[in-house]
Length: 321
Image 1 (spheres, helix red, strand yellow):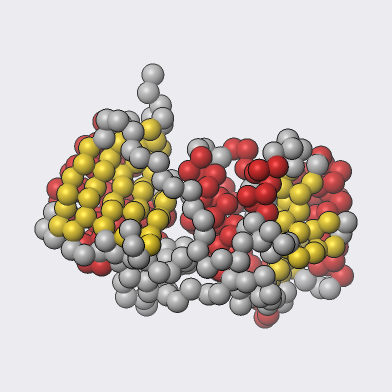
Image 2: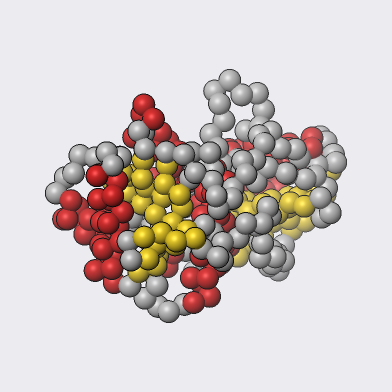
């Protein structure tokens, strides 16, 4: 597999301002977010807010239909964090017409993460925002985080994804921010028993689709979702054969209420943003990972020059009784 778009350089000194705001309770939430919003309004900047519904109600009550503030719903992008950068880019472009600066407030519902894998991908998304918007000098984002449960490990992990931290209505440089070029992923756990395994090469696409469809159906994936999974599988397997050495290994298994299929090959994806930005209408190729993100509930990618590429597709299945 090969990258099609050069990655942007995401460093703490880039124009894009990405702030973590740890808070405790509604009063602190309002104090920090309203301060951020009022700074924007005084500077004639637009504001885009995506926070849980209870926090939306709190802010609406304080802002009294302020026309420069737009509330959006990140759940419309679906559960896969791989879709969220494109959604934020669209929202901020829409409200920043004519080069108008835009401030965003985005609070992820961390406590509603579906799994450890989903939580890890949510953190990765926060880190990737610095890469995605590194050259966006007119955009800034505040990420409120409810620190009331005193989980210092979780706060520290999230802190490493933000170049700045907001305290007392001011942002300061975050010395724990991860400036490395490579994100320190958790190692993927092995498949659950029992799992199915199939080696594939050129000409095996039909066999791959058939295998995945049958295993997914046996795992409880609803019939109306099987065609979406088939498209995603076809795209990933095609990329794997074309760019990953001509052959690879497919594994499938069920875990809790999720069906997983994993592709491994000897290729390398150098672009950390691959699949997360909407392809241009006239773009030729380079749509496989984008489609997988749109069609699956979660996509995990691990790729190094030494170990090759592993891509896991997650699809929600009916809970077994």
